[in-house]
Every structure is written in structure tokens, then in C-alpha cells.
Image 1 (cartoon, helix red, strand yellow):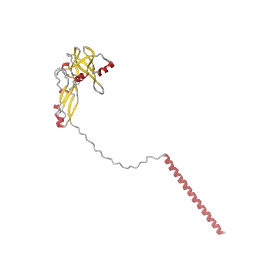
Image 2 (cartoon, helix red, strand yellow):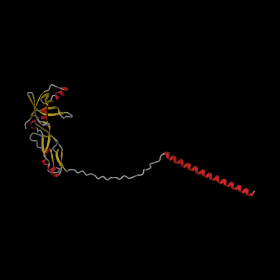
Image 3 (tube, rainbow, N blue to C red):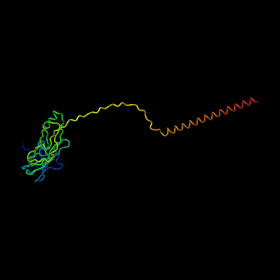
Image 4 (tube, rainbow, N blue to C red):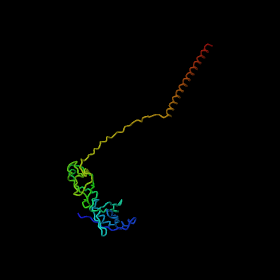
Length: 252
């Protein structure tokens, strides 16, 4: 595979004027690394966007700045929060004879037979692998074929990946990249409708005023009974008086 290339020029514009540079179709960037001073650069925005869409953190690029050539890795890409267009790029210059550490993305290809024929579910895990190697030995990406996942619970781990001579894997070998599991069936519990029943209100307690009213009514009733008794006694006394008067009249 041919190495990707980009052309850049030294950038004089900085600070708030960078926005005007972007509107003119230029992409601001910076180059730093071993054995070189940091350089402010600018690139053609359209050309840079096409090339950067094909690279990863482990993809080696040839960056041409005037008459000088630099072997670089893309260390950071800043994007617009809404439009997602590239706003700025950081390039790291590397020495071809010194090993570096970086992350290599994993790309899953094909279809797992256990998913297609057994109805399993594909579960993914590790999405990139950290490696150490000379810049020229770095893979741009790692392609993993899912054809080996022929049974339920079959898995592909980091230990199953072969990256070639000179590439040291730093990620845990037991890390799972992909596996197939049984499909979990959700059981819906039957909801039994509840028929509302009429419940008579329960009397929790009576108010103080209500209790006082009942006590006063009881006292009034007692007083009325006493008055009735007195009236009866008076009536009896009157009757006795009348009887005595009649006896006197008979004697006379």
C-alpha cells in the first residue's frame, strides 16, 4: 500500500485571524516532535479532509512542507461541534529508527455463522489495540474476520490477532474482541386487571366539638327528664288536695 501524502505551507496567521483562514478554505495545523521545533502550518481544507478520512492514529503520512519532508502521525483532529468539519490538526513527527507506542483500530468484517444459522447475538468488546513498533511497521488498522465464530459462545480475543514481526502488543491478550451469545427472550408478565370495590369510609376519630355536642345533648335530656318528674309530682299533689276538699264538703 502506498503511503499517504499531504502538502502544507508555513502559517503566519494566528489567534482570532485563524477563523478568516478557515473561511478562505485553508485548514490550520501544527507539527511537533523529536528533533524539530513546533511549526504552524496550513493545508488545503478539501484535500486534507479527503486524506484524513482514511487515516488512523497508527497511519504513517508523508507531510511535505516546502522543500522538507516529514514522516508524521496524526495525533489529534479537532472538529466543529455542530458541522463536524475539521477545524485543526496536530501532526507528530517520528524518527523511523525509534519504536513508538500507539493505538491501532480494529475493523470487523464478514458475518458470524453462529449469528446467521443459530440465531445468536454478536457482542463486541475491544475496539482498538495498543502496540509498540517502529513507525514503518505500524499497521494502519487491524482487520478481524468473524467467520471463525461458528458456535454459540465462540469468541475472538486479542491473543488470536497476528500483527507480524516487530509489532509488540501491549493490550491484555485475554481481552475479547467479539463473541456470540444466546439471544435473551424477554417474558412479559400477564397483568391481571383489578376490579374496583366500593369501600365504606372508615371513621378514624371524632372531632372535639362533636364530642362536646353529644355531651351537652345528654345533659339536656337528663334535665328534661327531671322536669317531667317534677311536673308529675305536682300533678299528684293537686289531685290529693282535691280529694281532701271533697271529703270536707261531704262531712259538712
